Amino acid sequence: PMQFAKSKNLIIMHMEEGNAVRTFDMNPDADYSNEEPTNMGYSVGRWEDKTLVVTTTNVSWQWVDLTGVIQSPASIITERFTPNNEGKRLDYTMTISNPDIFTEPPTFSKSWLAVPGEQVSPYNCEEG
Image (cartoon, rainbow, N blue to C red; front, side, top):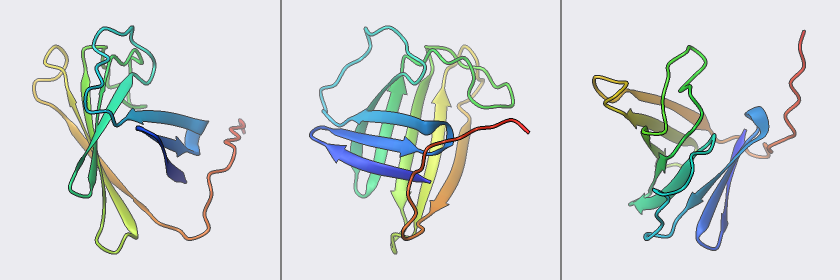
């Protein structure tokens, strides 16, 4: 499960998996180019019609995914969150630009279904 919340000029995304919390700065003048890289980087969002477009920079986490695809703080990650017309599915794409690593930007996609009453719960990862 995942949820979005709005707070002033921020959108906060909370995902149950890994108890990940991300903050999208919706200020159009936000500039994090001189900030030190962090694991999740710095995300700036904007609306394109009903699509939330998030650009993330300065990511220090060295992996794109669990298969071993690498990245660096020079990566620019563009994500698009688009609800379908009925509001029952959220379509997602992520494109990573980094010419030092990729010959062309890879794009990953997935979608989530809305489940009424579903809530983000504490993430309990146990071995075995």
